[in-house]
Length: 147
Image (cartoon, rainbow, N blue to C red; front, side, top):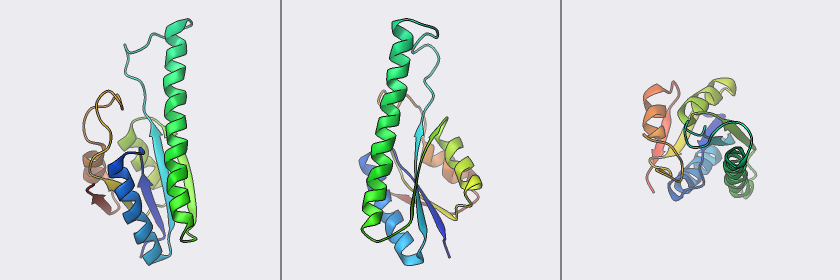
């Protein structure tokens, strides 16, 4: 029924619960798991463009998010490897819901499994519910998982 399952992750506890559900769904369907982390754009005004300390801070924030993304997707791969599942790890840049939906289209994803809540506020520099936007706009089934 499902050959390619996307598990977007931000490394949070709700995302970890979704990872477990995604792995179970992949096991039941002998499907591949795609672990996706999205590095979010920094809102204008947070850091100034150009050279100097502010530019350095911007680079540090992006690099920190990439490091978090690598850790989060590697965690999914490590958990899935216990069941000999094929895992694809990806880090994308942009608005999370947009990147998730584009990834679905580009990789022929059959289903998405994601937490109902992720990190919010200052930790993620984002407002609104990524999960809600994905559920409303996705053309493939979305399984939402509560922590």
